[in-house]
Image (cartoon, rainbow, N blue to C red; front, top):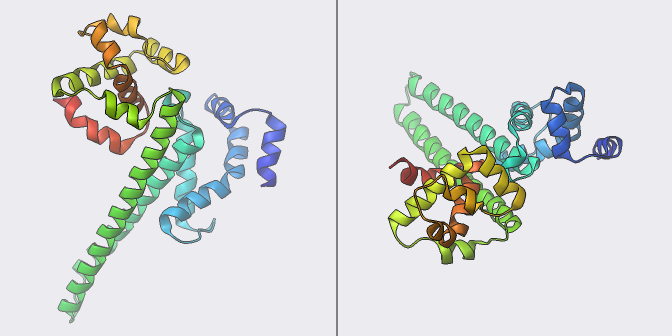
Length: 248
């Protein structure tokens, strides 16, 4: 806590501003930020492991590396705070680590030559069922986390989930065209910057880059914004949901 106050008082800047300086090469500031946010890292790792995490644990080291990765990859254009972004990265890396460790244990059991084959096979089944259950619970939690973060992001654009339900295009072709427009918007640096700086869809500029009418863009404005926010952020589950439509 004291280290957090120290950083806040000394730097007089937001965490996101500090990250920009770090990305420009300020290694000293990087070490300060990592040291100050070790409690946050430990708490995030513990929430996945369902136990208290010490700094000597391998999982904590994975969390540190993931936090550093989040700092390197973070961009204000993602529309979320660094802590929200890093929380997703840390949880994902920890779950990947646990899965790899458990998979290795399964392989070790399968290859062992014991006189209790039935007992060993039973242990493998139990472990696999436990892992599947664990993965399902964590996937569900990560989906919930994404929804909460996305809902928070929507509010900054004056939107809500009910808006998306009410304004979602009824026909599949219309939804596909809206998604294509959102993809074009995000891939164009100028349009993307206008979207995030003004918190509004740059309809006039977007109209020149897509094959749909201005009227169609205006009618699907809220839906296009929502899809653009998903595509520009680190929403893994939501992107998977959209992938089939965008790739067809």
